[in-house]
Amino acid sequence: MPEPYIRIAVADDEADLALLDRATWSTLHAVSPAPEAPFFDERHLPEDYLVAEADGRVVGYIRLARPTPLASNAHVLQIQGLAVADEARGRGVGRALVRAAVEEARGRGARRLSLRVLGHNAPARALYESEGFAVEGVQPEEFLLDGAYVDDVLMGRKL
Image 1: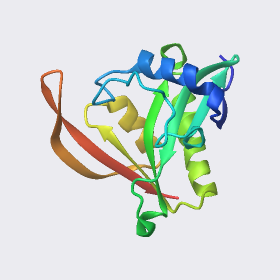
Image 2: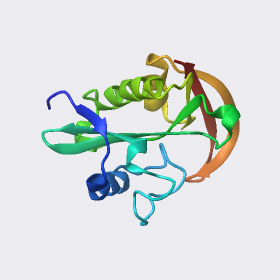
Image 3: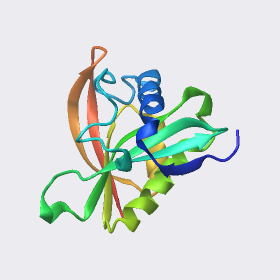
Image 4: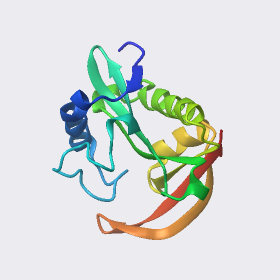
C-alpha cells in the first residue's frame, strides 16, 4: 500500500466514511455502535474530518472538533474519532492521521490537542503516546463494555 494521502473530507465522502465507521466499530475503541444516521450532520461537518486515501480508496479518518462551545476553551481542539480500515492497519495510516491532525490543529490556531481513549485500547494509547500525547486523567470504570468495566483515559499535548 502506498503512503496515504491525507485531505479534508468533502460531502461526497459520506457513504465511504459511514461504511468505514460501521466496518471498524468495536468495543475496543467505542462505547456505542456506529449510528445508522447520516455520517455528516450539524455537529459532524465534512471540514471536521481528515481523510486518508490509498489506491484511490478511503482507508481512514480522524475527526477534530472543539471539546466545548465556550470561548474560554476555543484554543483547544480534540480528536473525537479515529478509524482505519482493517486492510490498512499496521501500515502507518493511523500515525499519518494523528500527525496530520496535529498540523491541522496548529493551522487552526489551537494551543492544545486532547482526546479520550478507552483504557483497554493499548494499541491506540501507544500510538498517541509515541506522538507526544500524555495521560492527563483517568475516569476509572467509566463504561461497562462486554460485561467489563473500562476506564476512560484523557490524553493531551501542547502544540
